[in-house]
Image (tube, rainbow, N blue to C red; front, top):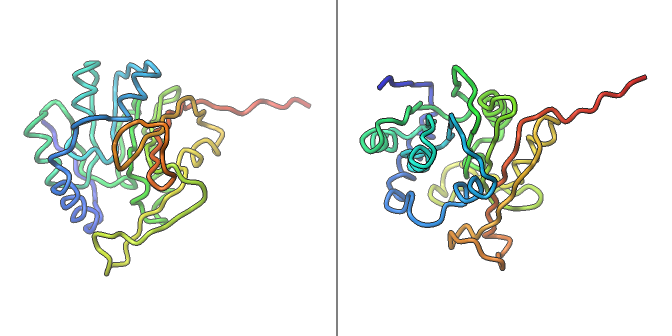
Length: 221
């Protein structure tokens, strides 16, 4: 298996390893809103890239379901090591969202609870890299907290460091470009990890399906 490596922010690698070790036992267990939304919208991908894929558990499920080619972008060495052992058919790229690149765009890109971790001075570069990875006519899934406005919060696992998480409705960054249309939305309770009707705003998660297509209408003289 060919190994891909990109320059990675050291703190991103360190915290990525810690996150993976804290959450390893629950990865791929129970309800997955990304997979649920894709099934609801009857999306059958041929080539999938997940940015912030951890050990690739979601990519493995998609490969099992559709036989698709799967590529994972992940900064954590520990997560990639575990994923290569479990699922050797996944191609891993060790990189952060603002440094990765694909030789060929894919028809489905997944970015689930990743953009809230991106420092603001790297957000637009990350958006640029994500957009470049989505083929024309392809799909982009964005999962994150379903908040209105813009909220930042000091990262509670490292309260003495200048590290923050940022909440906003990230699909709007893409739809505002005039190059993406929102075609599906699923809300769920982030803490309970279940789809329920009565969801508190502070724990509401959203998964949004976007299609990459030009929305501009030609204006004639």
